[in-house]
Amino acid sequence: MKKFNSLLDAARFAATISENWHFANSDETYIKDTLLTLAKTSDGEDPIDEDSFYLVSLSGAIGLCPDGEDIDWLFLVGPDDEDLPSTYTESRELNFCPKCGYPIASGANFCDECGEHLF
Ligand SMILES: [Zn+2]
Image 1: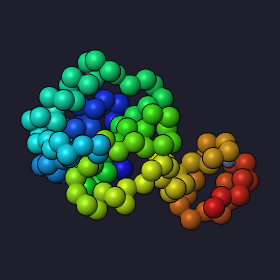
Image 2 (image 1 turned 60 degrees about the horizontal axis):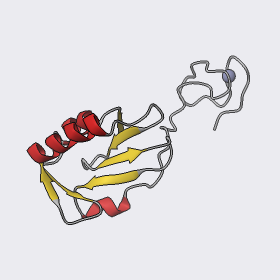
Image 3 (image 1 turned 180 degrees about the horizontal axis):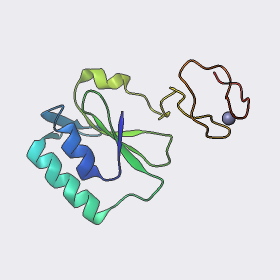
Image 4 (image 1 turned 45 degrees about the horizontal axis):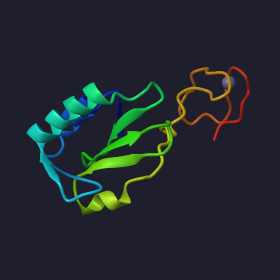
């Protein structure tokens, strides 16, 4: 999933994946033009705060993550979107030590810098 700081950026990216969306809480459907227009309006009238971000799934569905954890899927693409996760987790590919932030070679079991055990 990709993160975006505005709905318009998320919508633009989603439009490279899908052509149609339906609103999660109603039967309203959107095509690229109506989605982008709505996104512009939403960003202008109701911008999200710094802790929030939008997400775009692999299928092109758009969700809002208001607290960095729970995902509120707003625009869905197809029936498969029922399997979308309800919480956001950063990629588990450990690139940096979670304790000291030292860069870590993939597959390492311990941090070279501080000795933190890595999973
Ligand atoms: Zn470390």
